[in-house]
Length: 87
Length: 385
Image (cartoon, rainbow over all chains, first blue to last red; front, side, top):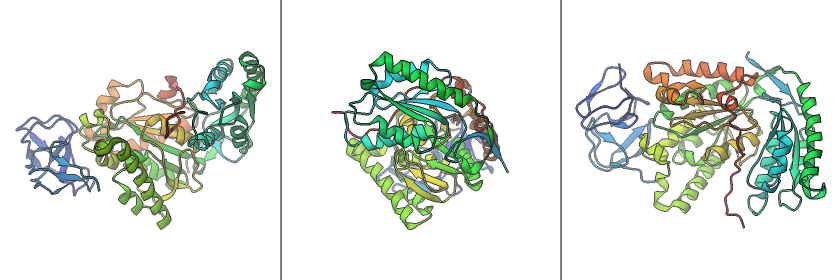
């Protein structure tokens, strides 16, 4: 069964439905499997593809901020690497 | 066509509860109001901390207290004033009496003090309660319903499970001709462009943008650079990185209906359909605003868990995860967390619709069973003087 929720098909992050340890599988509905490159705490965001520094991070099909550094596929996305500059 | 069994009021509205409200105009009158309500079965005191010592909030608090008494869930109301306060009992009572329901007011400074006012008040409220007990529920159409939306103690799943499920309920009620109020302006920050896109008219779009801009400015003025991070530590532990991310999950509760109107704190919308109300993200203050605006029912989603209710409204709690549902089963009515275990949003929404219809016809929510009817929190924008 999947352990990551994808809210909008256009999103580049998913929401972990359980703790996913570094090296563990992040499984999406539809069969896509990504290897977590860091520990992803339950309910936190995981990058579904490589996100370059400055690129928008998309959830609900909308920008929630910009990558402050290159975030690899399978990486943890949170306040440490997300620039939430105000629009 | 779905209906519910409610109490018809003289102004054509319908209550889902039949409370007799005892409303102090000022915190100095809380003791007398509480003593009156305590003595009469079916009476509810709407205690609060305001009514004087401020300037900017006075008209807002006056209309909010009148709105609480005018709420369709209130069969009759007694307003208790001290006498020298800024919010005047006669004005609050006049606002309530405009609905045609039984309403009276007493002034402690004119009635001989606490004990004599209490005794007189008990007599009035006993008569109101007898009349209310004689009323029967009748079939009412859903276009008489105004549903208030609330979320509190959000986690990253609130916007994935509970809020989208409630959004489907909102769409259902608007489709049935009813009204829905989305509020918590702070939790719309960052989403003005999405909400204004859904506005019915360019004027409403501008009002939505103004409302969110005001909320944004307020948080920036108070918190400076921290404004964008203005989310409780519990939200951040739950994986939400910014208020915009929380906001996107928050506005899911409103569903996909066009926004027909924007209203101020405590004001009832004139239009049916989905309205947006300017009230703080602080749960208890926004619930008071929803109640004053005439909502008969609140659906309240939560990720971290909260037991809070409201004295005159049933509040349905929707847990965002099965874990929370198990941890706070005493307080949760519906578990939207089943979506994370393969359940569908449509099934959760259907459960919520069926429960809402039963609650509107008299079934108690967990918050009601638990006696979660604490004080009414009115929003304030300036310190007292």
